[in-house]
Image (cartoon, rainbow, N blue to C red; front, side, top):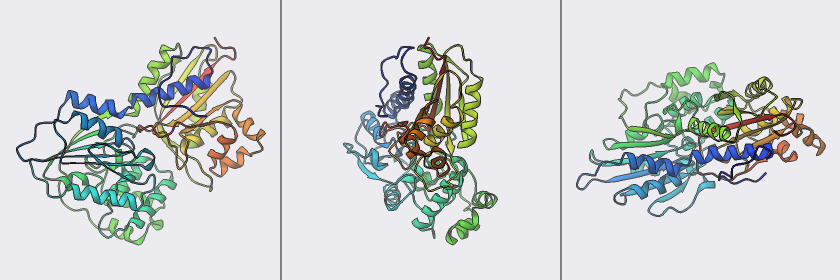
Length: 436
């Protein structure tokens, strides 16, 4: 199912539920427009003037790095001394006045390491009068890597794959990532010291903990190496780690204060969810209390969605809106992502739900896992449609092959790269069988 990332005209109440759900998804993406967020912030709070001979460095990293840099360059009084953009290959494009380099996501590779080294070079030998503007969005943790001393890129990539397959929540994964990096967990500020650092941050983390967004390059770390070690041991992941990583995490943390940055949140999942609510209300839908924390294991999240849907009124149109970021424990070899698997699980669990309903789960960045889909959109007929195609939905789900299942049921959501990233949103619309 192909859609664009631009809000459509206001749909009527007799419009198909799929079209209304997709419209709300587009509203969420539009509210997270990184260009508008950067422009608005710099208009309200312009950067201070530079001292004579001082330099201004602008670095943008993340899935929304390109539009954030483009917006920032329009608001600076003079071209910066250096401007560097690091983003994922899907969002690469030329930016006038800036150098654009790729990184890899979700698992870092040599391009991510090259990007990290380039950041460190740009931040070398700055003075107290110099200014660094850093524009941060989701995905930066993998796109820009600089492994700690003694840890190879292969070691770092192995750890990242272990974390992604573990089902750990993002904050717990980032605790480990920060402990193994020269840029994460305040490392960026150490590299830029003694220059002043200003950070504009687009959050892809539920709860908007700045320490977790892109693994917190401009804020204090989530914890110590000992904290990371204890977590990995408690989750039975320690023995899977490369020996160099184990050795590094056994060493003590350096005793040095973290330089402070001026950090400002300019967009988040919560902002997008609030915009969806306003749009649904304007369309005449009764909106249930918003769920800002649809997190944890995707199976539990599906149960939560279906439970709330079952409890919703059946005599009038009701919209249930969710924001969050679930996790998937990999037990099979299939292809998919957390949003696709969530949609597939809801399709199975809610197939017998009375009335007309639709459920959409999508990543606001337009990409769900290592696929070309943003997520899935399912109805009461989807599970049966997959089976009717000749596929076995139960077997595909057990193999974490949600992409193949939803493709067979014509239930994928594809919007392409959106240029933003504020985690995931979900829409469950339910109304009586006859449109009202």
